[in-house]
Image (cartoon, rainbow, N blue to C red; front, side):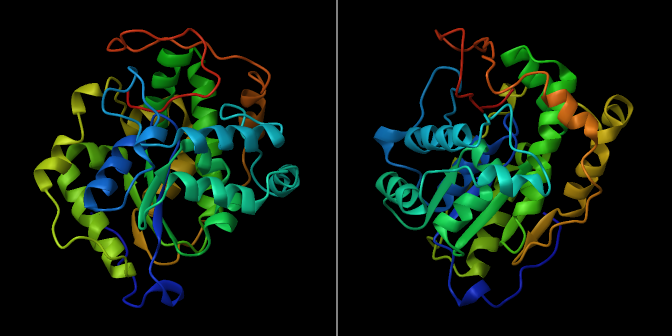
Length: 315
């Protein structure tokens, strides 16, 4: 994996206690979390793991923390599909959160009992300032991004939302991630690269964490890592040319992610132009009070027709 080399000194003089996996829904964060888990960091307690027939490989995320994130978003007047605003307005909306850091920390420690840990929930991507204040500076991040057209097609298939809405949601999520990751130790990677060679991705991730000072087992099983990713579950692909032709407005954020590929001991947020008004206009077409339809994927044996919490998986 190409990119900047992590500085040899450990950031803040102490090793990370855990890894938070960031990324828009439908972007491979479940696969990334499993690959980090193979390296040694623990996921949440097994009895708290989100499970369901709609993701045969598993979500590798905490049910308790998913519900807490939904509550945090509700306190802000938001949902995962109607996220908080980008830019200066974010702090005003975040100030509405009534859950205390101590309450969130207790919930986190109850379900993540082992250090180092790995945690993912795409909602955390739009709640990162809150969670950074809860988890402290000894937290590394793995950011996975995917072509927004692929994400939008997957969301349309699962939730019936327009492609234009999915692209706008992708842009808002990734703008917030890029802005709020400032100063964190971050590994940025493409979904395509993770799916193409999960073994190489795992080796790059391990080297990053070890150089930050995280204590990991001396060896990990490459075959287990490669077997943890199932490319056949990917059902949508799009090229850069298709993105430029169909959603040129998203290229600014997409190119910023491309430029950030690799590792950084202290991530420097790119200077992006203000979010186009068209993004907020598109997102306003499905407000926080809506209920998104949910169509189970072909491999799901059963499932409901509504989904207020969302699910990530792959498509």
